Image 1: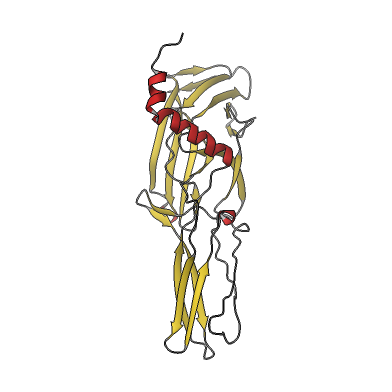
Image 2: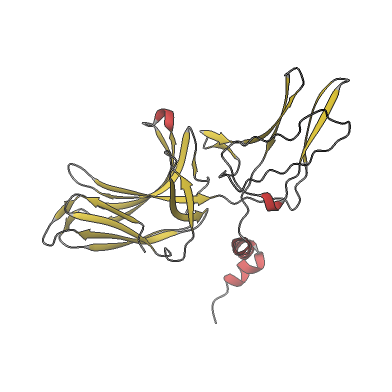
Length: 290
């Protein structure tokens, strides 16, 4: 199954087929213009492999080139300075030496255990993306095709999440405490701020107002701090108290969002680390096969 195709003039069409494209999960991501795109989903440390197919549109044509390569790129784009991009990952595989193509060809490629240190992200001011880039080098104009991949970062998370409490009050008059209970079942993502009115009228001393914020209707990323020293993504709960004279009192509390790995993937990662970190496993691995 192919998800990378492009038209490069009347001569050659480039296509990429991932080796596990039939079984690999896909994820959605919004683009700058609000559209939703689907791309293959990868995690940190996973290999990326497949084939680059070059197909001639018309038989008998020839294509001279100065080399063919494929790159795996991790890149940060600042929207206020699009001319200045920052690459934090750039792996290159040379597929062909300079020469001439006279017929369709296929080239295998593999990037082993690729480090993907950050989560894919598109926001109002910045985009962090991973993509495969195929380049056919020519004397005048290179033929280039990019295809995006989505990367999710999985975090080590606590078994129990303590409640978050916020307090705001007017001395000798009013005191409100805000408590946010976070359970594993509410772990998800969001990038849209939602507003809720939790109370109207005169509060009673000691009154508790239970609230629950469902994040399933939004599309957040995990909390991201100082990504490549370029940007951060943080989430906050804001409590606003409005008195009868329309005076406002504010309290803010940061919350940390993290991505929980699927059960199957957690077991795979645990077994992987146990196998390569255990001294017994290392010792047995060094023994020759019988």
